[in-house]
Image (cartoon, rainbow, N blue to C red; front, side, top):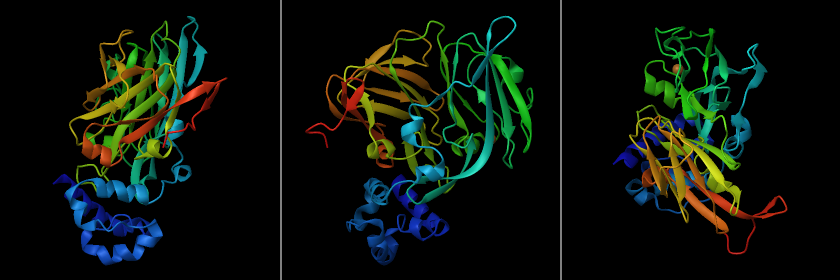
Amino acid sequence: MATITRRRALAALAPLLGVGAASRVLSSGEASAQDATATAVGGHDGHDAHAGANGAYEHASFRRGGRVDHARNGFHPSALVRDFDEGKTTRLASGRVLREWELVASEKEIEVAPGVAFAAWTYNGRVPGPALRAREGERLRIRFRNATHHPHTIHFHGIHPADMDGVPAQGAGLIQPGGTTVYEFDAEPFGLHLYHCHAAPLAAHITKGLYGAFLIDPKQGRPEADELVMVMNGFDTNFDRSNEVYAANSIPFAYMDEPIAVARDALVRLYLVNVLEYDLINSFHLHGNLFDYIPTGTSLQPSELTDTVMQCQGQRGILEMRFPHLGKFMFHAHQSEFTELGWMGFFDVCDDASDKLVCDLPGTP
Ligand SMILES: [Cu+2]
């Protein structure tokens, strides 16, 4: 069973994480130690004998173990979900817009679950990297600096010349530690894309955190909406090529702890990207509602009305929905194991009272 493997893996990791961390990742063979630390982590329900049989143990241990220190991580999922990086724009002599970003790859320890430290590689100090947003037809320039001890690149999805593809031995190729390069190309086609490091071994470079959403808006735009971005990801915290933690925007259960407030009847547009390594398929399922789905965001018209989409790694799409009912509505991967290991959250559908959302409604948990 994969869950047993993961539990053992987490237990093995525990001594590396310090006392606070170890108390949340103990194996069933260390029950007495676990009991001893139970008070410190807010109680233990004594279901240890069943722990290996399902993922609920891990779920419970993350949930009971307190919250990730978002401030120390330097990013907060509740902010990331509405954070689009439009860079800086100037006009070229031709009148065309030049849009520029600076991306820096750096090594950074982030807390990916309460007490679980992960030695990440980041673009601009966050995982996922910034959600880069441009408009169809612009000229894009991305200055990249590698401040890590390993070679990296930025490989963008979309249409561009071969020497701007951000892969080894083409164009600038691998950017060595301390090195810099500039990627420059036209913003085409409109749609929801992504970027990630393309150094080998690819899975390791991606799962360490070097990825982000790359959004090109259509020239004419899309109807006004409350816009969200989620990058579905996970972390292999013990380097056994399987994930111990699953999430959207990195931190498991973040949107359970802080539901995403949206207004009733308002158009909500979610840019959804899957970068998950080691698992073949990821998915997004919405409770109590359906959404229009635009695969890859390359159309103005949805192709499907559904409540569940699946994406393999690198696949992405735009979800559009309106919530007719107030209250909390869950979203999660429909792979139950992912859900139990962190990939779940809530929308909190609120009354929009003179531009202020009123969310504390009777009957909502
Ligand atoms: Cu890399």
